[in-house]
Amino acid sequence: MRMDYRSSIAGRFLERPNRFIAHVEVDGVRQVAHVRNTGRCKEFLIPGATVYLEQAANPTRRTAYTLTGVMKGDRLINMDSQAPNKAVGEALASGWLPSGLEGPVADLRSEVAFRDSRLDFGFTAKGRPVLLEVKGVTLEEGGRVFFPDAPTLRGIKHLQELEAAKAQGLEAWVIFAVQMDDVDSFAPSDVTQPAFGVALRHAVRHGVEARAHLCHVTPGSIRLAGEIPILL
Image (tube, rainbow, N blue to C red; front, side):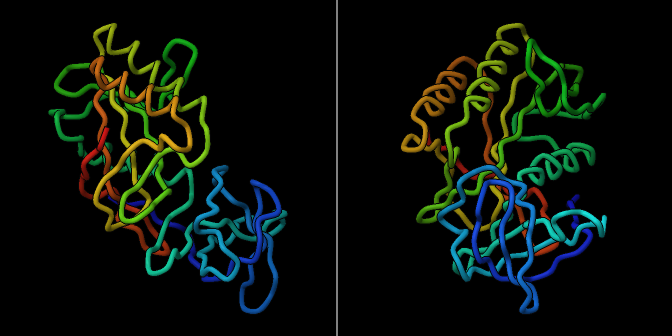
């Protein structure tokens, strides 16, 4: 199963004056686009880069477009922070499970409350309760991808919550959904935030299952694809 955008329009990136908007050029006209990603994205949001945009359904919205993808050289990267969650949700709803879990999937729910957090998905697999968190990955260097691309206290907290869930007897999983094709491995970005790498390694040692999956990305869609190694 894949997630499709309503439309996909090519443009040219000009600048990003703040985290939430970008200035782009579409058919020679300067436009304002919503950026649905609060990460830094400096390694690919470079003036002149080809970008892909979804046109807003509401014609009176302040931003006419949403920035969904960008070309980094020959590589297309989906940079919509909501897309990985939707892609994993579509896959789970169709019966997919990460390696190590056996189905069938039942009682699939999103935004599941656990302690004082909300985790992306809860369901049962072969009668066992599962909590699953999804993290989208856009930072690529030399064919390897890394998370996070900016410090994330929320991301560390989610790992700690998953570890607590495992201690209570639940299945606890984190999926790193890589928003591009054709990379060979995933690792925590110890340069960006050493504490996240510490938290991920600690969680895995204490029973949290971590997987990294490529996504097949086109200008108008994203679909969960094959697993790649996690290097800890």
